[in-house]
Image (cartoon, rainbow over all chains, first blue to last red; front, top):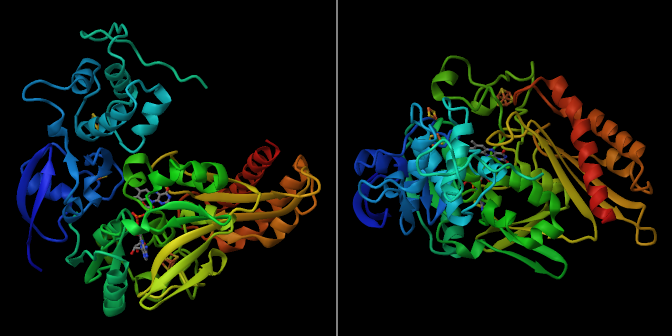
Length: 173
Length: 334
Ligand SMILES: Cc1cc2nc3c(=O)[nH]c(=O)nc-3n(C[C@H](O)[C@H](O)[C@H](O)COP(=O)(O)OP(=O)(O)OC[C@H]3O[C@@H](n4cnc5c(N)ncnc54)[C@H](O)[C@@H]3O)c2cc1C
Ligand code: SF4
Ligand code: FES
Ligand code: FES
């Protein structure tokens, strides 16, 4: 089995890399390209800590071969900030205490970012559904849901954070 | 967790894919979304020498209606199915099932309907790490001669936990299987073997090409039970179809009840289904009776191998079937 030369388009930058057919996208990101933001936890599709975007859609990078990612636009958690400037969503996670140990955070951010890109003002039910594939063992989820709702609705007043937003809008059943 | 080694093949079209399948047969596996296959490979449950990726086969990704039949290409993603107006309106059970599969980020964008139907059966004695399995004798499905789930079983009773297959069987779907130089069509009802080691009556050089659903002027519904509402596989599920009579819209002309995650394949329950013929759509007792018959008919097929006690799962067959019938009846009346 030989390595194959490929180019991956990650965070709008081309990366030339040689991979084995059995390398997952997650392994190539972390071990070959030093993009260690995406985390491996379960390695079998359950936890969501490895979530990245492929062509704007959230996917598990631990269950995606690097070879299958050729030709797609990949976005990882490193692609959220511009330089030292965090994205609104990242800042909102900090402001709302949505990060504890932080291991689930990159995956949570990518699932939330995918949601906000198609639905900038999601209600609680929609947020919970979009994040349902991401497991967090620390926060109890409430803070994460609030952080996403805030990032989606920054104009609303929020007593909890500096940037000024509100707590989550309850779903109308 | 590393994947075992394999060669990766990326055919450009269906013809090339069928050529490769006929050349390599048992040495290859098809890679669609990989959300079932790659997990099993990581656990060392199978080690194909080669994977054939369907990545370039956009020709297998479509949803269309033709002559009263809904046709779905096997590589269509679950997310395309969920967002299809046609499926939402005319194949309700399939829509409701796909929506519940795993979680948005696991299956919906990469997972395909073909891979969903053809995902391997599961068993909590078998779907374990290589390390876990190395500590004891191999079971039938792992190449050995015993079964941990049912004493003295001469065959594997692993469970089919496919949400999609259960819903599709309820709405009377059939599959088109292609191989080099030919095609055949098989009803989902007749697609399963009686052994969980290889649950599908399909050859290694065949490819699932299309799923066809007849539109029958009926309404369908799907209910499932899992530990968590996302991520987890169903431990019981039910798909039902209710067809109203042409002469009296309040009467049931025909019904199909299918129970999933209770056996080696989704179970079409003929006795429970026919008990509804001629009954009124508002007849709750008839629904309860059908749910009761379903429970009794499905119970002997199930073994304790997908979490929760067997007794609980059997009891819940009643609930899933009853709820699905109620939901389908409401849809017919609308
Ligand atoms: C955490 C987790 C939770 C899950 N929860 C659920 C759930 O709740 N319900 C459920 O039903 N499933 C569940 N799944 C299983 C799986 O993700 C889905 O069934 C998915 O739809 C499989 O599709 P895929 O394209 O990824 O299949 P793949 O993994 O690519 O393929 C599955 C099998 O089908 C074969 N195959 C695929 N396409 C073809 C074809 N066209 N012709 C011939 N062979 C083919 C492959 O060789 C392989 O053996 C879950 C998986 C994970 C990891
Ligand atoms: S049902 Fe028995 S033979 Fe089949 S996978 Fe489970 S333990 Fe193994
Ligand atoms: S590491 Fe990919 S889902 Fe857990
Ligand atoms: S913050 Fe620790 S797992 Fe989510």
